[in-house]
Image (tube, rainbow, N blue to C red; front, side):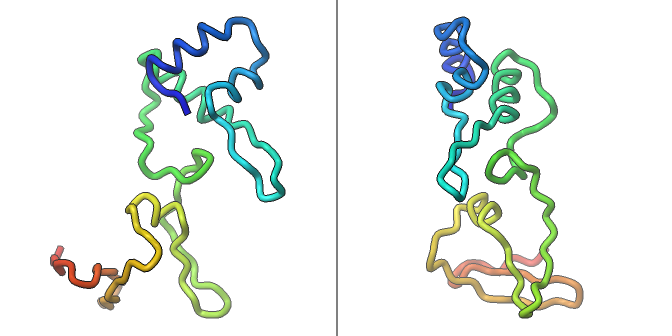
Length: 121
């Protein structure tokens, strides 16, 4: 996905094309579960506004795929599992096979990387 000056240059280069083609050409496309194409108009327009120097107070952190805002809330599933989700593990740059020690507090659960420092907050 193009951002900043590269995005502005591409938009200028493309000139008078359809909005869909503009979004697609700038790389704001994702693949749906059924294999279809999804154009991410919101992410494109936010990047375009930022490239033009207008900030909407959104820093990009706390967003999942497709630009959705993360809720930072997890729900225990019917089978008792607690699912964190890919958007959170990606934000922390966690990889398959990373191991954590589970630390249970009175009102919190902390995940400490195995071999990492256990910092008290």
